[in-house]
Image (cartoon, rainbow, N blue to C red; front, top):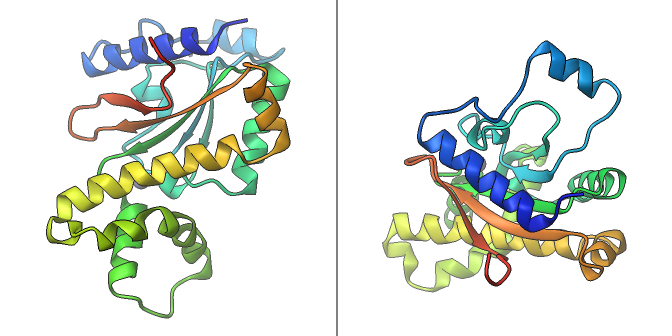
Length: 209
Ligand SMILES: [Zn+2]
């Protein structure tokens, strides 16, 4: 079984290939790989990412079929179905690493900030349920004077939202807490840059990693 740090190294390597425009060397999607995977899967990492079309996890980490267990939802929020999905992969496949991957210019965070500044009615309750999960981690930023610098506010809000999702996953269920306590699961946060393609693993990195 691979460890969380081996999994993290592999993600970093894959992202380096992606950034260097040399994708496809480590990933396999052909018929022989499809044949292999019919019997089962052994994903080495779980990614909770945003649904944004510019941030597909398998592509930015240059991975093929059967390697990543990916959960995507606008704003990479944590609701019960995301916690259940993480439990499923961590328990069934012994996957040792969870990365919450947000990204620059995230529309879900932009929408949340806009709504905090100009509350409006008549929103879809479904979209509102996403905004409501992002809001607690970002509303405090509006009182820090950051409002004057829109770009800095958005950057900090995106990172605050990622850290909040990491924390919610870590304490999302007794199953996940136990896996973390036994050293069988690491949950960390990362941000993908739309501008450079680089994934910055900025939160929850173990010492020396
Ligand atoms: Zn997004």
